Image 1 (cartoon, helix red, strand yellow):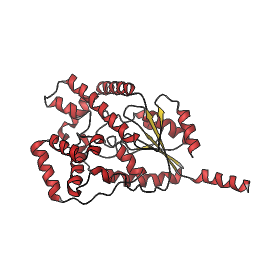
Image 2: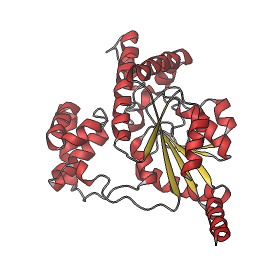
Image 3: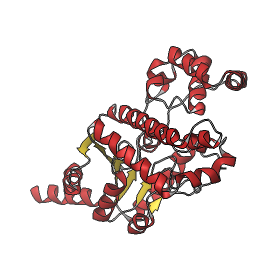
Image 4: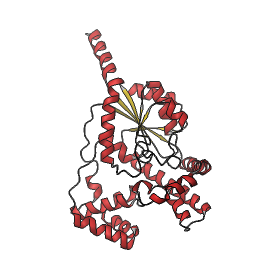
Length: 314
């Protein structure tokens, strides 16, 4: 009997497919650790960073460098153009299809990123929202054109203070989408979120990287300085003709666009990038800390400690 149990356990260990999810705020070191994990488990990496998807955006999105990309096969890195409309729903479908392929070759895959909604799309599935009339959508768009985003931000704060605290309130598309649902349903947008997670055909282990706030902020400041040295200004200048596209409504680019428009001097633009990135990191942590399935590690912990935890969780 004991032998049979042992054999069954070994078979289970061999056959189970496991998605190792690595999350955390920007600049915390997810790329480096994800590569170490992928090497150890001899598997590939699926990126869930919604801005690293775009071919034209490399420096400002901190795309892994050539050496990092050569060490381990990555998917969903610079695979589409900024001109393409690519939703979180598109990513959910494409990522699940890719995972199905990868799990045919290996029992492990790494999913890494700081975009909480995109992580949730893969691990939990997207939520179902009510249909919204075109009239509401058109009215909100007109308000945005006439009054700017501030008016919509304030209404969202009243109608759904919970979602207001975690959404990127500078992202007009997400603010307007949330307001559409609030107005059309008469209920907060947040009341439709994470209601019925979908069961996935693989085991999920979630790892989070974090650090003291001051350390995170210092790492962000250093990264922005390195981005400027690497040519972020020229990259943004080349993308300026497309600044109205949703993909470019992104920290690091929109501040440089303000400089190009003459609204900021360059030093102030850089300081704004740092400030807005710090705010973004705070929202990332707020999102991820609500997920009780994440086990947190300090950014300085050895990869071996993370690997040991993962092996014990299999």
